[in-house]
Amino acid sequence: MNRLAAAGVALVIVLALLADSSLFVVHQTEQALIVQFGDPIRVITTPGLHVKLPLMQTVISFDRRLLDYEVPPEEVILGDQRRLNVDSFTRYHITNPVQYYQTVGPTEDGIRARLNSVVSSSLRRVLGNEQLLNVLSSQRGRIMGLIRDQVNGEMRSFGINVEDVRIRRADLPEENTQAVLARMNAERERVARQGRAEGAEASAKIRANAERERTVILADARAQADKLRGQGEAQAIALYADAYQRDPHFFSVWRTLQAYREAFASGTSRLVLSPSDDFLRLLHQAPTPETQPAP
Image 1 (cartoon, rainbow, N blue to C red):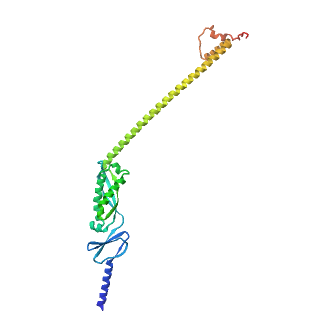
Image 2 (cartoon, rainbow, N blue to C red):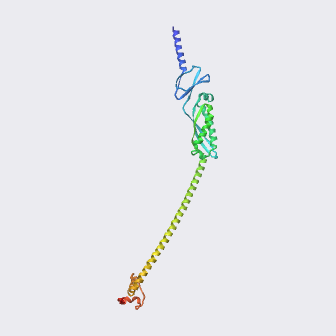
């Protein structure tokens, strides 16, 4: 009886171990490859509980998600013979677990060395035909598309699909950076000098135009003033002549008084004249009205 009980317990244990080794779970982020004695049998992509043959078959899980691989930074020579330190990364999916297992192996790390080699070669090949300005401008998207297509074409035989290849950083070597900065400073200085020269030229033109306009305005003003002054003097002469013709005696007395006012206005004027000089006649004798002839 004891032997039968022990045999029953042993049988239960063996069945439990067989059931445990024959059942496995596939998660939503995984895809499983069933291998029997080293040969791939089938691929399971449906998540859930699945069954395999115990002891004979092995389950190898691969990630279904988008995977990243950072390529170590390397120096690349561009088409214009400039050197550039490129830091890039690659994103890929494992699309064919059987092909991946046969070419790379059961681990995901096996693909990294091949990706590194293929991406590095494609970077050098594509960037070797491009100028520095293209890499640093909006042309980078086109360049990265070319690199991605080349890498994807070469990596399909490994059971993966390359979704994207991107340059994270693209820096000039330190010695080149200083030379580029020096050239940039020189170019900025040249542009600044050109701008200052153009500004000085424009300023000189503006000043010359303003001076010319000023000269023309002043000349027109002087001509107008001379014209008005001549007209005023002509009118004054005409008035003097008319006044003289109407009463010559009064006009003579008025002109003499005007001369007195202008000569003695300051109070410090000195005149050396003979007492009998005609200029002083009104100071000796007040003027008398002259009898006008009857009209």
